[in-house]
Image (cartoon, rainbow, N blue to C red):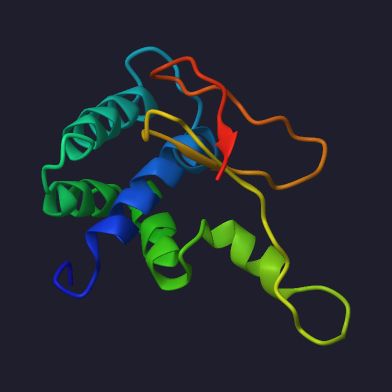
Length: 135
C-alpha cells in the first residue's frame, strides 16, 4: 500500500496526528502510549526534515496501533483528520461547497493542527514551543 501513498501525504498524516494525539490515543500521561508515540513520531519527522525518506517507517508506525490505524486510514482517504470529513460534507442543503477548515503548522515542520471551532486557540508545538502558523 505504501507504494500507492505519497511521502507528503504520510508526512501530513504524521504531523496532523501529533496535533490530534490526545483525542486519538488518550491523555499524555508520563510513560503512556501517547507519550511514546509522540516521541517516535517526533524522531521520524526530525529525520524527514533532513530530507531522508521515512515514509515506510511512519506508515508502519501509524498502522501498528488499533487507535491510530483507523484515524490514519481515514486521513489517507480524505487528506485530513477523519473527524473533519463529516464537518466538511455535512450542513444545510445548498450548492455543496466544501467548508474550509483552518490549518496551523509548526514552523519547524513537526506538527499540524486543524481548528475545529472558532473558539479554539492553536496550541504551541510540543517540540519547539513555537506558536503554530496558519498554513
